[in-house]
Amino acid sequence: MIHSEAIKNFKPLIWVEGIIGAGKTTFAREIAKRLELRLIEEPVDDNPYLEPFYKDPKAHAFGMQVLLLHRRYAIQQLASLEATGIGGYQGAILDRSLSGDRVFAKLHLQEGNITELDWKTYEEAYMIMARTLLPPTLMVFLDIQPETAFARMQKRNREAEVGVPIEYLNKLQNGYQELLREAEHGLLPWAHAVRVCRIPWDTDTLEPSAWDAVSETIRGACRFAY
Image (cartoon, rainbow, N blue to C red; front, side, top):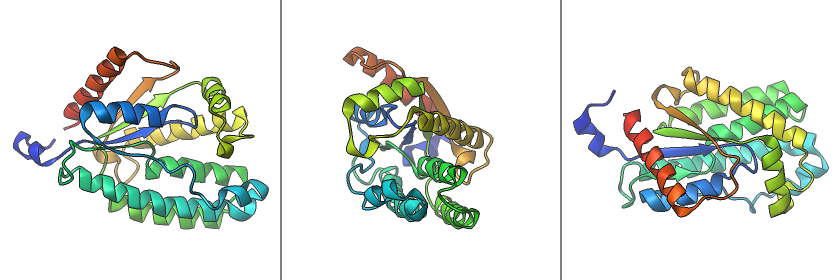
């Protein structure tokens, strides 16, 4: 535990995780404005690998994951700086972390899109990067049924998500459950300092008062983490 006097030098650093369609970005936006956090969103439209990946996953999955790993690392460096308070915010919130990307990379291994050698290379890079980043104060997992997420994806109709089957979402859900177990048992470089908050999130809309209540829950969880 960190001494109470030292807490003043720290600001919350929150990771929001969940499968595609879970509502991570909406959640992060609503919490950020209520808790005065720096919102750092996942870029969704700037991935030069997406089109070639869909044409030939085995040829491009590894390159795509390495690119995302480096981009996510840069984003998390920014988030770590915000957790010091130097940017004027009360902390930072991310709508997917380096470890969330790792769930996708591991699924590519299981699907045969990347080789065992590629996975070992990716994992080594991930572990080195993870050790240099500030651990999150709180990891929020939006626990949603794959069927609900699939319906949301169909409704928003993003080009990058067209053709993603519900079976893939089920596999992602399993991958995230493994990540949560690793986090809760301290099996990853950052996991010794993190509190995991699982929130059922099949609800499509919330009233402002409900968002206020969720924000206070997150605020309280961040305090308890110290």
